[in-house]
Image (cartoon, rainbow, N blue to C red; front, top):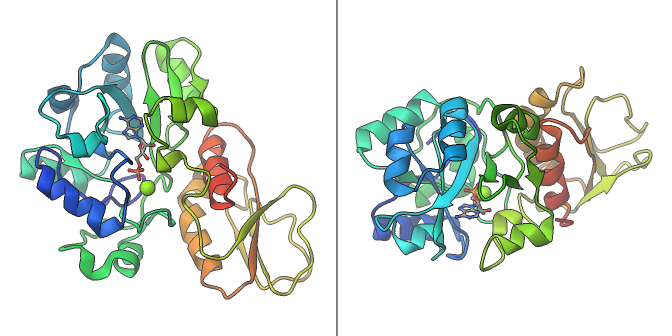
Length: 296
Ligand code: AMP
Ligand code: MG
């Protein structure tokens, strides 16, 4: 199913056998919990226990790219949460996703619709390329508007971002009127009994090796270049992608995964990428680039 962040591979979240098939189609290890997608906050509270912060954030941000990690209710099968006593829940901001959830009448567990560890899909065509016959239907809702995954927030006892994503830290602080921390790798792992692959050092990765460049891009006719604004291109290169000429982080996020896929398919020996400013959506973009480089 399309969502505003990336395409998801959806199954009835209350049916353990259906959820197991999602893990199988992706080749995803079962210790990586799925996000449960709901059509509204009322449905969210059937799978998760709300708190004052959660209620406030749901009212302000849903539908939208924010996943809340909350105590789960017994109705949620263990396989969805990888046995955790918490569940990640969010309401996607996409008319087709919302229609699908309402039509199904149940919450839908959905990870990104890519093979495990690989680049997330932002078009229906990306899903067909990677999952093909492994899925029954691909609902084409057009290109994803946000382009990177949701922000995963543990709201209590004090708010901490477990994975930066499509909703900014600044916006969360504005809504909650308090500071929101961003977990470092140790804290991310600590929130989970096992390493959570969405937080693993290598994830969201192209097959071509990717390096993060801080100085000038090297002049190399065999290398692909991923530039933020396009004002720093080397004279020689094999292929180039510019995320946003005007330097707009929202546009850069929307374009990120498709650009990585094109560079991955360009036949370059290496992809040189530059990070973006570490603010707003830049946290999520830089997080994906670091993981694509295997740096975590
Ligand atoms: P994906 O659906 O592929 O975007 O990945 C979902 C990610 O959300 C997981 O890899 C975890 O990092 C995070 N997540 C989901 N549920 C939980 C949870 N109960 N506790 C902590 N993190 C979670
Ligand atoms: Mg994923």
